[in-house]
Length: 388
Image (cartoon, rainbow, N blue to C red; front, side):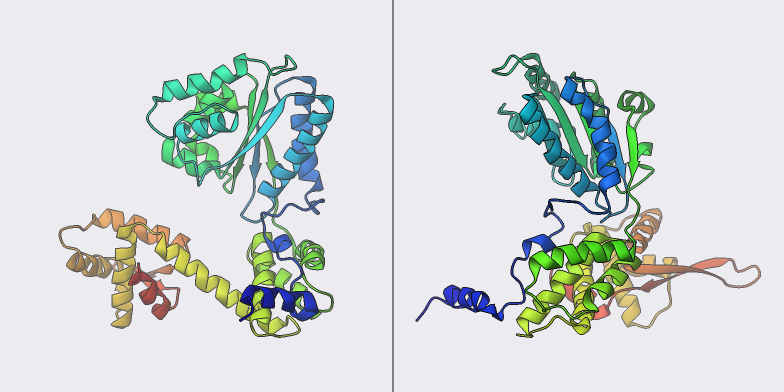
């Protein structure tokens, strides 16, 4: 029997594949030119250029919703800076930290030490020992007798601040030759920072607006040329993906996911073309997977509240917060949270788009009531909850 992977590889090389290279459809892929973000990249460079004169650059914060190019722009600027610094023999490091992976100050500083050649364990040392080891790196010089300049990119900084406080920013901004670039989806993330830390941060702010449909089309056209074989995409596919993503607050990641998933559906069906129907079904697939991911990663008590909402929905009950609390405590008597906490869970589930709430008046003297409704498929919710 021939090797199945060789057969599939041969099929692709003989032109039976939709794709020639999927990687440009991944939002983490960095193109040679980042279109429609030239101005933001120039602003980052303007604040970083001082490092080429051996001066610690300004701290910078990038704001913008998911999929507006913040991470890509910071990485693009990093590559450009490292290129010119190498030519000028300036001793610069730019280290990217995703705060969903490193959620405490200790973890971030330990990772920075390890990236800079100092072995620090992920746990076991005191915070003071880790910080001292980190700062000691900047007291030495490299082989050319030059001191290190470090720029730390902290992506999704609000997650780290929310979990562990603002100590990481205090440590980094009070360390010589270190500057930070923070990336946040939320304009109000500085509410998580104490005034003394905000003062030492003293950052320059750059806002990334959502992409428009035309801009998304430009991005998708550029990526599609690299990713798909010739004459594979029907002419309305990219405009449809762009219009759908523009409705999702101009999210380029969503646009790329739509196009990639549409191509994969066409490939799975041995279709010679990617059609609008593939795009619409790709949208359903992405939303299906998103719901599964959200529900699977919810804390246990929120999953239990969701299970109670599901049970009441199946019973065709009108779901008020009081009725929900009764159903929830009946299921989990000894392990139930407070009524007040249930309100927090309801707000969080609504923000995630899993449920909706509608306040209605019961009439004079009867007050107002919150009515809760599921906003995702019951069968999908049930299957996901009971497979966890």
